Length: 157
Image (cartoon, rainbow, N blue to C red; front, side, top):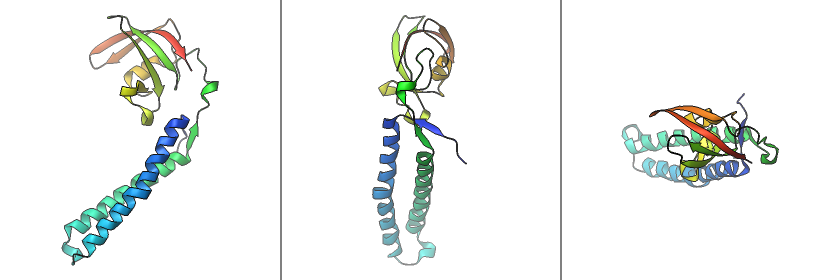
């Protein structure tokens, strides 16, 4: 039995769209490639056929993984998130105590992380370091460049 994974409605929708794309576009493309390779003759020495069959196996494994993930996914009711501490799906405004720069991040599951959209993984060093902290606390976070201190300015959502 797989563990339950929590997503926003948006994150779960993206997974479903990815699954649909794999099933409706990629699967037929690979089936076509297998058919074309099969038409070229002797399958025992047909590298194109072998490559297409291997791609099919990888695709089917990815489809199965996504189907299982979606089956075990739960949509988190964002209205019930406690804003007193940093938790998954919290929007956190922090200040780097060294250079006084402020940043705002949303803490999300790994599958929803998108640094350009200011969504950081709960498993990232900063995400882990912020979890459980409250407004006014300073989080000491170990990053590849060393230790950084971030003051929690605001927690929303």
